[in-house]
Length: 114
Length: 115
Image (tube, rainbow over all chains, first blue to last red):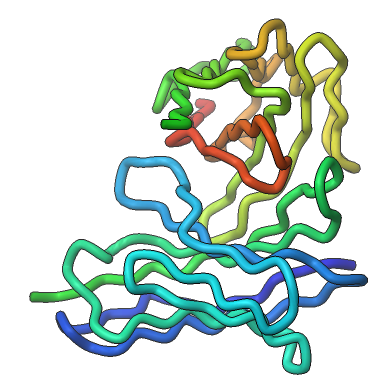
């Protein structure tokens, strides 16, 4: 079946460090891929998405590239800030349009220290 | 825009009682609402999907009579945990979409503790 595996946290970084959170997936067909972020006390928010192979999603300095050959969608940011401290969820949607239920990874907690 | 409010954020109840959780889309009309359950250090597990005015579609293994979902309007869905037991203690999260179902807007979640 469809599944998402992401690196376990927590991840602790100093401000301005480089961030990578690994995410790999298993899916039939051609899923859409997402990163959601959950700040403390808030609901999940869509951070970025990619809908086909080689697409790069980007937002707020975060990037992730849809790699079909490695079934991966790793999240990266060149210089993290304290305000990036949150839990990050990788997700896939195996069906497009009206069939697109989301399947989530377990989440990775990121803590950025000043 | 696209704000989803979930209430209450935390509820404690006695075993055998029922608990209702509300999910509201505040600034848009949600054609579809989703209910998830999250165990500690686990991913969000989809429980059910509901469209306004129709019965919810439950995922395999989710008891329909235990988890009652009502989607009475385009801005409100409720999840009622009936005759709650300690094993129902969990974090419940709702989301809503209005165009593509895979673009979902999430509530902040409800932590249910059953004593």
